[in-house]
Image (cartoon, rainbow, N blue to C red):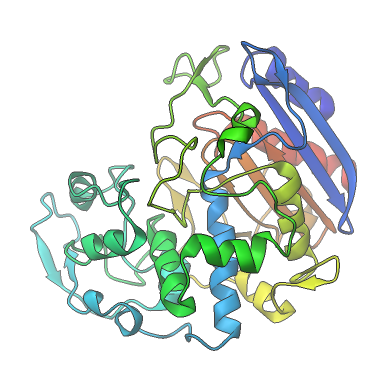
Length: 384
């Protein structure tokens, strides 16, 4: 595995990376390659800060489950019970070519469907349907807005599909972050800090990098030839999705807003491996963690991301679940649950093999890049 990842760096497909492998919830391997910034040749360290983008979704899901345990909501609650502005949705017709081609909603979306990307929302940035044009025009995820303002914008847009009809990756987890605020009576950032970050000693995880830590933020990269992502060569990439992470912003995105270190996120993953507990601190009950990696999709529905189908994969609460091993993986990979971030932060837990692993880099797009698949194959090969 070490040699395989070194080859990605040597070929200028990655600027650098850092990985952690766990066996029986203990760290058995940690390794770094390359640089956090190639120009200055600054080394990647345990405290190098990464944009974790959609790895934020797992943290948001844990936050919501904390409030589920407190009895603040039921999974089958209609969304409008907690967000009354969502009481009169229209839905884009199947095959529509214009966002005005809508029909009546057939069933009210539930909190469970929000948690598992089945509520009818879209993302906007992937241009999957005419609704996405409205998401971009209305700036649904504007970093200068708030979670409350985002929800108000969504209330005036049609859903992309009938709730429960499919899995569609979406702003659902940002909606969930707003629900956390409503259920807790706290700001989303404050709730995460008090209920998750401080108890788990996640000292560098936040929605921005304070000035005294700016030098620890890794540079983000993209391929010099976006049409051929396996062609050697990298160039620095601007922060295009949510703006700069070097200053606070009002939009604390529950779907993609956090920065973190592999040291911090390893504590979080070890909590999940420990069925909700880490070093004597309990965040969730074991049954809540189990629920997170239990399939919530309707029969026949599988996970599909734009331009990337994930075969034999279903979804729980913030986590994808693997029903068949990928090429080169052992049968123990069945039941693995995972998610990652679009800039190349990948985390997965394999109960069948008793292992978990993380690999962090900064490369756009990095969610479905070959380096992460090779990393996983080699870890499984070494550990099983």
